[in-house]
Length: 300
Image (cartoon, rainbow, N blue to C red; front, side, top):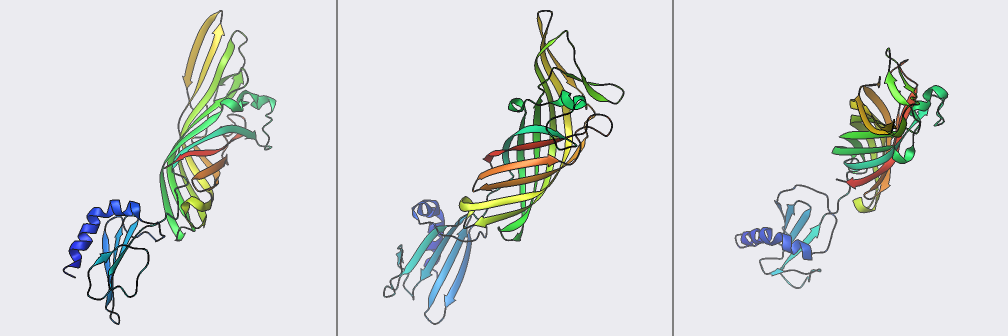
């Protein structure tokens, strides 16, 4: 053992180089720091030393009293030597919420129709310019059955742009939000924007042999809080170009509860959300419910 300890320490120093040359094997994660364990077989006088370091594993098997080190793939039973096996532990799960999401926004009314009524048409969307961008920077996974089934809790911030397809200006009058048309201006750009912070909780399942070859599905609810909202217009009036911005709550609900779902394979994830909370506060605007569909562009 006294002669073997320097060998183990030398392996820890040279481990990154050795690991690159080794074949990949599968093993559960234990720690992110070196951990040395020992098992002895009293019958054969063999001793096994296991070194855990991050997602790597070194297994040293000492045959008898010989401390000669041989790195090979198979053990020669007639050769009383120490066998060293270095392997990489495959990840069993990728983060499926943490990352950057990109999607398209829209509205449905209380009849679950995207064809909005006359008093709702000021929120009609041009879907090519109505996008959703989210930075999901926390993904905490609570296992129920290892990586196969668990609960995901996260935190993220979303930026919504609704490109209005009609020449309405959104206004607030006497705690009521609606759209008006100004015939003296020619709108070139008409946007409604909002920013919200999100707190999702989802039940997640991963089915596959490892994270890169695993089907994943998660579903649950997301609580959101409005951080800000504004309108932005670009128009021409009497031959002059104008740009205007107006910050207001526009009687938006500050809190929102949504149904969310994410599905994919490996690192590829598609997502969808549907708000159970109306976009505008009760009786202060049309009863519209926002939805989003998209893809995770850059998982963390």
